[in-house]
Amino acid sequence: MEAINTALFPGRQSPGSGERSVTGFDSIKSILVVDDSEAIREMLSIVLHEEGIVYTAINGLDALSKCAGHHFDVVISDIEMPFMNGIELYKNLETLYKNSFLFFSGTMNEEYINYLEMNNLMLFRKPADILKLQPA
Image (cartoon, rainbow, N blue to C red; front, top):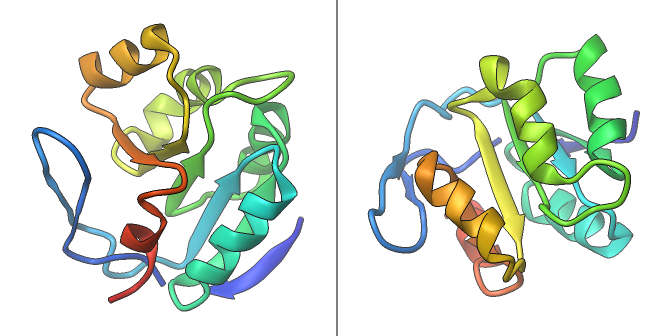
C-alpha cells in the first residue's frame, strides 16, 4: 500500500449549493485517495501531506481491497474509473464511510451527479476545487 505522510481540512466548506461544513475531521490519521490517474493521486498526496497518512488506490476494486485490511478516516474518490467506479465503491463502503467519503471528479454524467445530490454527497470539482482540499 502506497503511503505518504499527511492531516484534513477542519472547518472547511464544501463547494456548490447547499454548502455544509466539513467537521469532525480534526483528528484525521489516514486518508485513502482513489483515482485511476497517477498524476491526480500524486497531486492529492502532496496537497494533503500535512493532514495524516495518505494511501492511494488506482480504482474502486483496489480501494475495496485496501479497505478490507485498514480503516481510513476519509476516502476521496474519483467517479469515472475502470473496473469499479467511485459510485459503486461508495455503495460498497456506505455503512462504514457514509460521513467521511468525498468525491473529487470532473464528471459531467448527469446520472452520477443526480445520485450525489440525492444522497447529499460531497463533490469537489477537478481541477478547480483542488485548493479547497489544501490545508489553510
